[in-house]
Image 1 (tube, rainbow, N blue to C red):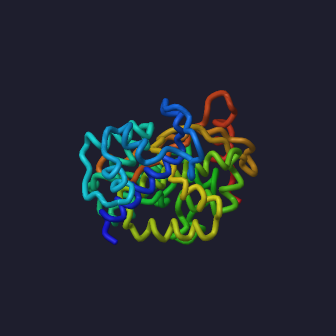
Image 2 (cartoon, rainbow, N blue to C red):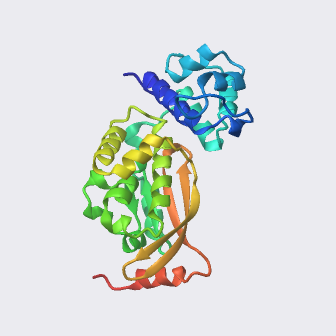
Image 3 (cartoon, helix red, strand yellow):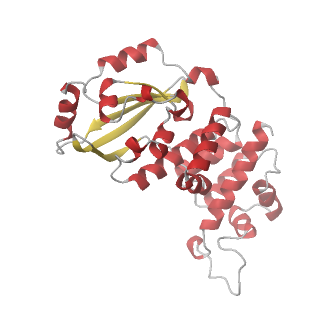
Length: 280
């Protein structure tokens, strides 16, 4: 299967998933009369809202359109009431993106490593494509774990969130964190759906964790680059950290995650204590 075919198929699956979530009442149509075989809007109802033919929309959902105009794509996005992140996801799938070389997202340049070694007051993690963990500063190891203990293929932000008990057990609100994590990975995956690393990661997680499998199938997407998470650290107690993602402008598959102590929570002092604690 070619990259373009896989992208068209995923676009169709995503549109079907979003269509199934809408009701006639949600889009301002009167309630349906009689029995409907499936929930959600029908294809012809979406097509009518987008001012395109039902046949055209059907071929789009079935992955049988080689291309789609910007006008029609925008109309479909409006018809399905997609939010900004969902619209971005649709556009990435509909337009073949310019990809960074896969191997360029596997390494950390010397300047970034120096930056990590110089930052001592907040945890920082460098990541590459598919959210692989490439490097981290000592405080990130103190807060979470020394990721060097894991095999290289398991050093991944999604993998550790689902399958590493030491990380998964720290989340105060794990379901919310898991949902955001999977939604971000699916957004990243749209840029290079043929990536063998992505296939291996999603395959293992789908086999080993039912929660991941369900969330991946839901096709939720997000590009949220900041937020707040609460962790229960085994020795430092509760940590409230405001996270911020900075993507590299020359390679959007790579970036840094900074975890900044939330004000008025005692987290800053807890991080200082962790940073100065003697090694076990």
